[in-house]
Every structure is written in structure tokens, then in C-alpha cells.
Image 1 (tube, rainbow, N blue to C red):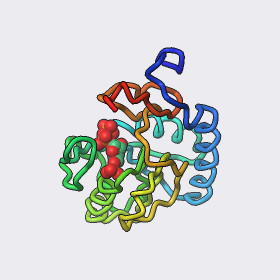
Image 2 (cartoon, helix red, strand yellow):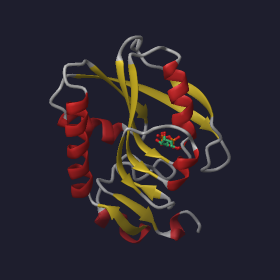
Image 3 (tube, rainbow, N blue to C red):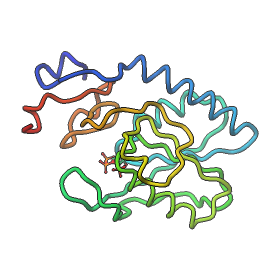
Length: 184
Ligand code: PRP
């Protein structure tokens, strides 16, 4: 899927596929340097992080294992509440492992905050976070994010794994939707 397939539903491309790819290369180089000589476990947060995980993992030169968690956040509408339910847990015991959470976006930061507390209780050797996108509200939550791709404005974005009503995840870029799509 690309911009031409969206027609009038696309408002604006915020980040092109090329910009995302270049930034992920930089992040991968930093991660390679930071984890040199250590076995890394990448934990992708389904569904949104699929593209980020696939691209970032393939750019790493160091060895990396991959595992996945699916969580659902209770909330009203598009806002998450911070109360999270595990839909799919890790298949890996992360005790004493070097774990890097891979997220597509940190919006309110509540999902990540819960996830960090949950994974920390399993006593990994280290726990860090990589996110492709971060919105301003994430600053309200006290979670250190070690690798951030882009700081973006507080707009509803789709593409590169991010959805609206489960659509548009398969766009190669990050864009905003025309208001008529979501009744705005
Ligand atoms: C998105 C995204 C993060 C979370 C961020 O997932 O992938 O996990 O929201 O929001 P927060 O910072 O406000 O908690 P979502 O729950 O939409 O599920 P999805 O990944 O399946 O789209």
C-alpha cells in the first residue's frame, strides 16, 4: 500500500519510508555498539511493532533473538488507561537476559510504563526501550526511552505498523489521515 492507494483519505506524509529507514539504520548502529559482546533479546509489542521490529532487527549486525508480547489496554476510545491485560505472553524466560523492548509509538506512555514494570519483575539482566515514534504526552510518564526514532506532534498517525480501525498498518510511511476518515 502506498500514498496513491489512499487517495483522499491521506492528509499528509509526516515521515517518508526513506526517512524512517535512515533513522532505523542509525538506531541499529547505536544498539550494535551498546550491546557489543552481549546476547540481545528483542521484545516486539504486537501488533504495531511488527514493521519496526522486522526492519530494526535486520539492520543489526550483532546476534539478536526475537520474541513478542501482545497487550491490550483498557480505555475509552483511542485513549489508553494504563490498565493492561496480557493477550500473548513471551515464550522466553527473560531472567538474566538483556532485553530491548521494541515499540512503534509511545503516545501516553501508559502501555510502556506497565510493560516495563511487568518485565522488570522477571529480573532481566538489563531492560531498555526502543521506539520509532514518541508523542509529547509520553513525557508525563517516568519511563526512560533509550532509543527514539522521531519526536512527532500530537496528531493521529497511521502507517508503518500504526492503524486506524486496524487499517493502514501496511503503509511504508507515517502519515496523518484526512478528517473525513475518522469523522473529524
Ligand atoms: C499502540 C502502540 C503502543 C501503544 C502506545 O498499541 O503500539 O503499544 O498503543 O500507546 P500509549 O503510549 O498511549 O499507551 P495499540 O494498543 O493501539 O495496539 P496495536 O499495537 O495492536 O495497534
